Amino acid sequence: MKYSAIDSKLFIENRTRFAASLKPNSIALFVSNDILPTNADGSMGFVQNSDLFYLSGVDQEETILLIYPDAISGAHKEVLFVKETSELIAIWEGAKLNVAEAQKTTGIKNVMWIAGFEAFLKTVIFQAEHVYLNSNEHTRRYIDTETAEMRFNKNIMAKYPLHKYERSAPIMHKLRAIKSQYEVDLIQQACTITEKGFRRLLKFVKPGVMEYQIEAELVHEFISNCSRGFAYGPIIASGGSACVLHYVENNKECKAGDVLLLDVAAEYGNYASDLTRCLPVSGKFTTRQKQVYNAVLRVMKAATAMLQVGNNIPDYHKAVGLLMEKELVDLGLLTLDDIKNQKAEWPAYKKYFMHGTSHFLGLDVHDVGNFNRPLEAGMVFTCEPGIYIPEENLGIRLENDILVTVSGPNDLMKNIPLEAEAIEDAMNG
Image 1 (cartoon, rainbow, N blue to C red):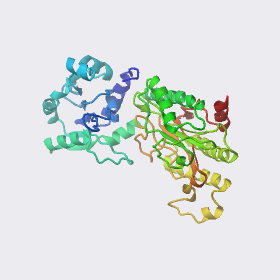
Image 2: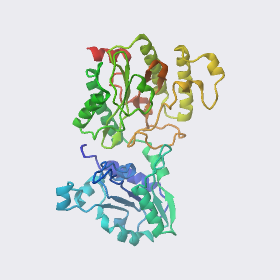
Image 3: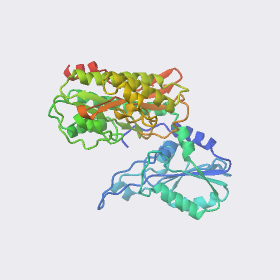
């Protein structure tokens, strides 16, 4: 790992809150992700299961966490199973966690090798009534590949078919939606690294630069600051490509007069940040580009102010839609007749602003959480309105990361240039 060690108090507190949410006499099991293959003997590298990391802080493969709060033996209430390390593994792969290191990372006293998991599980599972298994329950999930978690769950249910099985995901969604100060600090660090990358670009972007060269500048800055790299696939879209919401080719030349849309951000300690900014390739926005930019900025500022304790995301999205509707009329993109004749399920403004304004942010860039749950202090959301005009080869989206607090929204990216004039001044100063 590139990041500094995280205080085990974070994971101890997370497990305590999770254990308190279980039914009496329950065992909960969490398993690490696979190292995904490519071809021949290649792999895509390792990304930890977010829920396992949230509860343990372990950032390596072949790991299982068992939580059994009502276990008869105190040693069985929390057990961590990790891959047995050796001198050979250390030479070929790099050393894995030994028992003492795993204990320090997690705050779990009972650490065993994963080879002993099956035998150990038999000694405790028949004492339990309920077994909680985890799964990736995300509304935007589209996965055909069988994951390690899927295989693990099938194996457990096949071997112990008479237990009462429960879902951990609803509990994890509830807990992970509220960030502790430890987590806020990690997200803030990711935002700070993102700021460094963005500021690097302000003097780099100019006509003739290739989108992939901009990507390379960001990678350099992110990794130089102890990030693994991008928190998600970077979108570096100049001109008309900015109207493709998930543009990932990043292979075109930035041309004079175009606007460059950058949806790029760093991760830190497995926690994500999420930034979008737009730069005039020539260093100065045209009058029309600035009109659209400022329209989006007004919506962003008003939307940010709505991220208050007690509000909810469905009502918030409707309110933001009305703000955007007015801006689009003022820009000459919508008429009052368009609004009068719109369909309730697809309002007229969605022709130019077709995505939502906010999503949860945390260990995953599209983090877990219930959008119908009233906003609470500790939740972190993106705020990212946009206007996309293909006929003008212009797409503008602006995005910051917002912490909900009892005293109002706290913009974790407030130090990153946002106003059109500030962007121009930084590019030309």
